[in-house]
Structure formats: structure tokens, C-alpha cells
Image (spheres, rainbow, N blue to C red):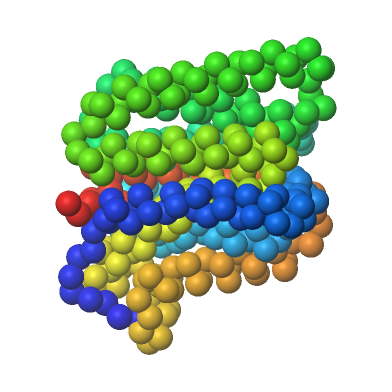
Length: 322
């Protein structure tokens, strides 16, 4: 594994470019509709979201990559109270709730996932735009509520009557409009052009996801958000792992691959995907696989809220280039 003696930083233009997946999927959609009579539509349902190639390449690996950053003695010492008390308590509560009411647990998982994904993107937007404020909060909250309502209606429609679903749809529409108003004002408050572009791109990604739901391309709706979230997350993990282990290998897990001499840009996603596939091979029962994903997901959301706090050891390894 190579260890360049130069610290890496995250380039805002690269994070911005990740959002182009929305335009690519829109192009695929229009080509499919115009020239192939919606040939992809039968494969765009929610069932596709359960395919192993999706779950274990675009969901689980970035969770694995996040957890592997803690294979560091000083990190274990710093975060020990969270791993000794916070994570076990969370898993106990989620496990009991899942046993008593799987549907409610999955609903909470959906809402928490949307909160986590949205907060990541809008949080990065605030760093790049170099400002926050009330309109930033309105924008973030509106996206979280609108997306959580929309995806809940899509994934768990059986929970609601027709009238309830109609009112929830109106609620989602209201918050979509509010998010656009808030984003417009927030764009004007941004301190630089790349910040303005990032805010606009983030809004476009969410709007694209809503559009795909309206036209029945459900898989594209989820994939748009998942792709942006996961590739962005991997960018942070790669930069963190490189900078943390640049001078001396502090991560005991990655130390096993030192002789391979691969950069973290390669080894982090590669190892994460392999571990995810091994988990899939080991967990054959679908119900157990879903429970495992939910438990790992909640663990991920908890540790991410801790590890990226301002001043944390993880945060100290991250910088943004101009």
C-alpha cells in the first residue's frame, strides 16, 4: 500500500460533479421512453432495491468503510464510551423494537436514512458555501420532511388509507415548494460560486428523485440519492484514511494490506465491497439479511453523527481545497 507523504484534501468541484448522476439517469430515462417504449419500466420497481448487487455494492460497503476507520488504537480510546454504551444501547432498543414491530422499525429506518443522507449533503453544502442561517435550516428540514413522506408512501403504502395518502402527498408537495423557496434564498447567501452551484445541484438531485417516483421509475429515484450519498461518503473515507495513515500506519486493519502497496483510493472501496459480499454469503435468510442491514444502518447513523463533529479526530483529517 503506497503512503504518499502529501496530505490530501477534498475538492468541492469533485463533490459537485458527483451530482451529474441525476442528469445521466434523466438521459437514460428519456432515451428509454422515446426509443424503447419504456423497456426499463418493469425493472424499476421496489423489488429491484432488494437485489444483492444493489444492496451490497451501493448501500452496505460505505457503512463498512466508515466502521473500518475505527480500527485505530487512539480512536478506540477516544470513542470508547460510544462503543461501550451508546452503540450497544441503540442496538438493544432497535432489536427489541424490530422483534415487537418490524414494520414500525423499518419505517423509522427509512426516516432516519433520509435524515442522514440529507444532512450529509446539505451539511457539505454549508461548508462549501461558507454560511448557514435560518434559510439553510428551512432548506434542510423541508428536504428531509418531503423526502421522508414521499419514500414512506412508496415503500409502505399499505400503512395509509387513500385519504391519508392524499393528504400526505399534499404535505410532501408543500415541503418541496418550501425547499425550493429556501434554496433560492440560500443560494443568494452563499459566499462563492461553487457553493451556489452545489446548493442548486443538491436540490436538482432531490427533484430528480421525486420526478422518477412520479413516472414510476422507483429504482432510479432511490439510486439517484444513494449514488450521490455513497460516492460522497467514500470520498471522505479515502481522504481520511490516507491522511491519518500517511506518515505511519495507525489503522490495524489496513496494516494487513501494507505489502500490497495499493493506494487508499483503491483499497478502501475494494475491501468494503468484499466484506459486504462476504456478509451476503454468510446471511442467506432474507429476513435475517434485512434485520442485519437495519441494525448496521442504525449503528452507522449513530457513529457518523459522532465521528464528524467539529474537532473530532476524524474531522481533523479532513480539509477542503479552494
